[in-house]
Each structure stands twice: as structure tokens, then as C-alpha cells.
Length: 341
Image 1: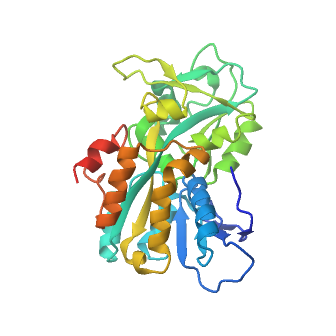
Image 2 (image 1 turned 60 degrees about the vertical axis):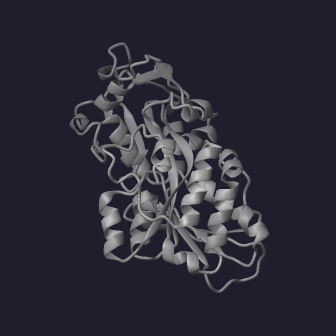
């Protein structure tokens, strides 16, 4: 991944157990007294937004952009307080968050920007796990598993009678919400005795150095660390087509064969912020260059048709979420949702 040449890193701030660090992007060493565009939220979406910001500042050096990583939930909290202009999100906004925006007088524009697959990974030293079923993942991660499902041989009898050390996204993360909804059947329904972090790099480090570990995070973080991690294929036994165990990849995420752990990624724009200098230019630049920069960041671009629908939504200033009335956000098709507008 390309890195910003003149990247200033503000010291890490720890809040409620989650890491939130800000990247300030400017094209030179000139001190800019005012932050024009403030972004925070998902660590999964962060690499895409970082790439967009790098390219944007190369063309528009007069604007300053800060990008925080406090998780999707943490980003929405700041968004609801009008502290940021744009929220990066690895899941759609919740009804409770939408209500809080309404109560605060905040209108927002919802823009999917990419597809992602959640990767289930183990250590390179793990010789026994090549694939798991959704039912086995549920048995391992559901709330009732806490203190009970603690050894590998409890998942499959021929696996070692060794402890399982679990790693996963923190509770402020949209990845946590999506994983638990897709695997357990209810968002945030999860055992609590695992190592949690909103920073996927912390999870990579923990899993890669522990032979008995298993964890999950966005596919991009696996691709950046595939020399240190082993990818696990997932068998969705509820799939009527019987495809068997599938590994996540750009192709299987885009064609929706990797289920149920494929999902869209979003940015949310505070409509009032569009009047601020630089914000409208930034969002248009994001959408116009998303296909190229999403791919360069290790994620899966949307189709050209979907990007056209999303661009039209932004140009029309359509507010609110198309996901609020859905029973589940798992396995949705963006073409169908946004063509209805």
C-alpha cells in the first residue's frame, strides 16, 4: 500500500479500550491552523480513506484532512455529536444511531464505497485447521460458549486437546457487529472471553505469534500479512447451492460466493458539512476514484453500475439509510437497494 510522503502521525489516544490514532494529511510541511475535513470510524475502511486522502491532497494541497480510527461505533458517536464531517463504517448505521442523528438535527448521506470479506485466520503454525463450517464458528463464538468451549477438540474430536485462544474485533467495531450477526444470528451476541481490539494490527500480531489462536478481521489485513497468517475456508451449510468451503478473495467476495462473511463498506457524510470548504470536493474525489483506490487498498470495488447509483444519490443529496427497514444486513444486494430510490 502506498504511504503518504508527508504523513504526520499524531500520538495514539486510548479511549474505552480502543485505539484511536489520527493521520493528518498535508502535501508539504506548511502548518495549517484549521482542520477542514474530519473523519473517524472503522479501522477496516481506514486504508481506503487513507489512500483517497493521499491522492486528494496531491491535487488539493490547500486542504487538511484528519483520519481517526475509533471503530465504526466510536466514529458514529463522534458523528452524532457533529465532531466529524465523515464517518467511516464497516456496517450500515443502526436504528438507534439514526434516531440519535435525528434528535441532534443531523442529516446524513449514506454511501457504500467497497466490498469486503471478513477473514477467519489462524497461526501459520496451526496444522489442523483448513476449514470451518458456520455452525462450528457459531458453537465457538456464541455467548453460551464462554467458559465452556475452550479447547480445539471440542470443535472436532480429532483436533488437539489444547486451549483455543480467540482474537476478534472490539465491541465498538462494525466488524464485530457484522461477524456476530452473520455467524451467531444476532449483532453483538458473543462470548466475552476473547482478546478484543478495534485495531486490526493488534489482532494480527496476537494471532501470528500464537499457535493455538483463531481470530477474524477484514480481508485486507490478512492480505497484508499473509506470510504470517493462515486463511481458513468457510462452509456455509445453509447455502442451498452446496458450494462447500470457500476462501475469501476479491472474486468470491464480489460474486457473493463467500458467504455469509461478505459485506459492503461505507462512508457517511454530514449533509451540513458539505458547505464547508473542501468537503464536497473531497467526497466527489472519493467517489470518482473509488474503483481504482479501493482495489489498490486491497479491497473489492463495487460495480460501475453501483458507483453510478451512489454518485447520483450524493448529487441529489438523498439522506437517510436504505438499510434501516431490513431484517438483516447479511447477504444484501446493493443493486436492488439503491435502484429503488
